[in-house]
Image (cartoon, rainbow, N blue to C red; front, top):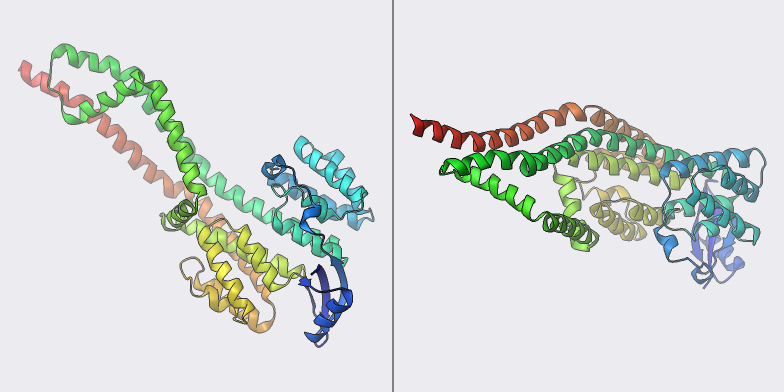
Length: 406
């Protein structure tokens, strides 16, 4: 049975709604909506998936979030200025400096010229344009308010870019410190330590266990450096492969939630993304069921995906979303449940969730600003412990030699 994107108005309240629905034809679609209390205002048949040919390597193509953010904002401006969609896409394909994105936009332009919609052209590149992106564009095309949808989408991408930039920025400092510590440690073990240990061998001193342990690591790194690189590469690949499995996603998802400091950021970032994306999709006219489907695929942590997948089934049965996510206080704090409940009662879910997203985004901003002051003492303790262990392991044999001389 064919599927349609549709927009419709509630006969009683006059509110606009939209989404996907299966129907025999346009007449049957209008009758089904009228039976539910809605008047069909616009519709568009969804093309069968086999009509879209996705190249193998296109699935792995990626474009920086900043490029997509600029494209969406400029697209909204051009359409509001009266340019056609195809001309706007063509102009932006000439302006972008990213070669990969330029090629993709040219392909989307060719699709538009062949009679396809922009969402259909973008659907050929799932690695670049997410399901959220494509669905919002589709709703904008069907409802005729593409400019408004692009503005909403641009704001969503800008907030997401800002959020990720703050988190990454906060992790740069500890990352640099840890990398420097590892580099200095390898230099000490492979270059400086052998010169010191040669003195111990000449003195024929009985070495303590800590010194023997460090010397053993040093000898292994110097004599089996190819094997060491191979082991590190194998471990890295093994961790990546494990992380891509179902068990790995659950393990690392749980680890991220319960790590000190990190867990708090993970919860706030995911709640901010949930609230903003959910709000954006509802404002675009997408139905609650389709919204939950898209959001569950957009969030990164598997436990959020599971919770929203369960919520999808419960909402289809008529259960309120706030009651379902209330079962997961560890990943959805009570504030999220209460705010969502208020939105459901007042009929202003998208408005209250937008404010909730802003609240959590500000919380993340404050945490990331203070991140260096929180992590710095922990790093100092780790570095101090490593240096102290190394110093004690090297000094112990020297004291033994001095005592023997006395």
